[in-house]
Image (cartoon, rainbow, N blue to C red):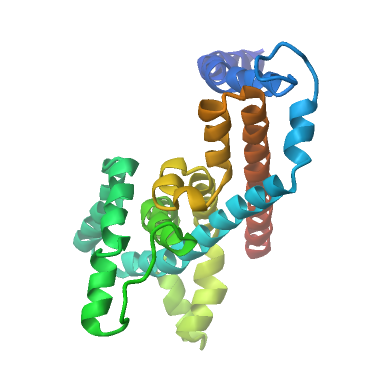
Length: 283
């Protein structure tokens, strides 16, 4: 009886959160799904015409692939830069850890719009990058970085970096400090210790960071539009065009569902790989 009472009490405590989740997420998602089952933009004729229109166009498959590839490239770039920073963070004194943590969190205090427009100044034709490279003699004429995928990935790497670093630092800070000394005492080099001890144990934070960066970068409409421009077409731009320019809400809803399912598929795959890696370590 006591166990049953405790379970009922737990459900009562979780009920407000469940209701809020249903009202703020589940209900709008179901409404969005319902909008997809209309043939016309006025939503008067039920049918699957918009699904056939979207998935019958080969161009949309390319847009989906480009959107997912953008997320993968951003994850790779943030991982290459972020993981060494996390290793440096662990070796710092508590005072410098607080300083570095403030630097990491500080971009989150600014609007993504401000950070995105700041990258226009940095990557522009007469921006900081081109000016520096020209003065150093590395290039003879300014590089075109705006409205290119390279410039977009560079900007997204900085914008999404806190989402990679914070989970990594959280996990790596809890690792036993004596592990590296024990590995060195057993004859392991620093690289071997990194790949066989530190990397597997930091895998939960690594996977969490990759998931957050991937989900955020693939849906970063402002950065994709401002830095990438209209030359680079990703699913968020397609959704915006169909909903607010063409006013074809059913087709926009279909594109939204395609974006949602695509991202969830990749996230599920990354989560599965993360669980397998963690299971191999603990096993």
